[in-house]
Image (cartoon, rainbow, N blue to C red; front, top):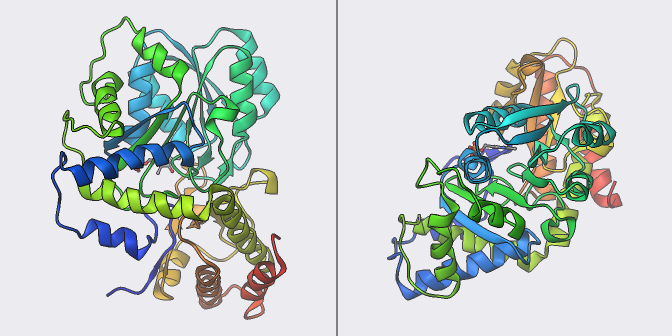
Length: 389
Ligand SMILES: *Cc1c(COP(=O)(O)O)cnc(C)c1O
């Protein structure tokens, strides 16, 4: 058994109980036990997303399918969309929206910054838009955008808002109902804490009404919310239904993970992510490392994106792996060769923080970066012992 620690921004370490559900014998998708499991899952998702009026869709696929499920239902050719672009996954959304025929306008920020709210407001006032799209946490930069304020700006102008939460949901505070965000989506392998394979999309009533009123034909069967809607409604009403076979083991694993999240409580889960991120940031600072996010305000709690110090290159990632911790290289095209990423979402505990920082320290040392041995571990431990910072 490989005992290395998987600290990338998805897939992540998952709880043993979640793995056990995956190893079970597949059950019929119309068995009473599975119907109960899936129905409860859908109810629990509403609680995790804080979307009491939302319609959850759980569909086999990756996060990119979740993005596509949202775009193809909402966009008709010619629709104007404002993309608040904070990096690699916002760029992906632009490509996807353009394939749906959208007229895309973008508000961008330099790498490491979140687009400014006044620029977003000005763009929204310049012309009418159907939809605002933002990436809650961009996985290529570790930048978190102010989702609550963006949702408010959209709502004030009667524009729909959609947030890609694939690197945020269940790790960063998001209150879909209270904030008036119309669509929030994620995938199972990020902070939700399940292996890859499930696209999770929560659709608010305004967005669902837009799909129902759609005139242009929808050129996808698998992605059509209206094909899935009766299925999701049936499972929640504890009735059997079939459109396309649900991945029963993944849904059983999701059921376990959602119960664990809600057992801990979303406030506590979000606070734990903030605490782990704070300990990591204290360590990076003590080691003299610079983060890609340019301010603490925009630095995500779900991952750290860290520039290599002078004289250190991408071979650091391999050295950290040799020390027993798997981290990720760069992803944003402008800075890809200059930084690495450490995921810290899901089941991450203080022990994982210390093990990871220790491995990074040893790898830096081997790469010739000078620092007092243990400086990063001491700073992380200080933050963990001392409280939230
Ligand atoms: C991982 C990720 C995606 C893509 O998810 P896949 O499962 O790789 O398709 C989309 N958006 C964000 C913000 C992500 O972190």
